[in-house]
Image 1 (tube, rainbow, N blue to C red):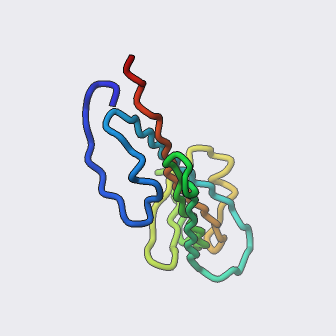
Image 2: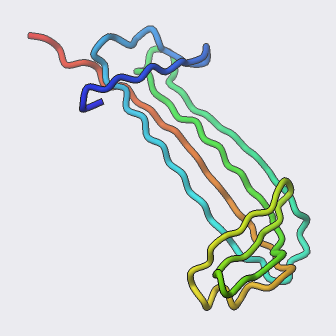
Length: 135
């Protein structure tokens, strides 16, 4: 890192062009997370979970780099609405959770039995910048 900290990372055999890395190269990693919630009023959609993963890597001869991402889509049912604590309880396929809803207008629009579709995306991308050439 910029402050001189080092991190040791184990990579699997799927890491392409690993042999091109040299001492002094800078490996930059970026983690992105996103959550989108959509209220499905009066829906009777089945409570469910879908997981997807995808990855892209460098081709042979290219500089090392790539990305891996996952997307989880959950359909959950509203089982409780608590205006005092500004929370709703959602029951998904594996567990129930309480979510804060700060906007009173949104909270008033949610009813027990409604469905909420949640999409969670997490992705890690990395690239390698070669070490500066020494004169």
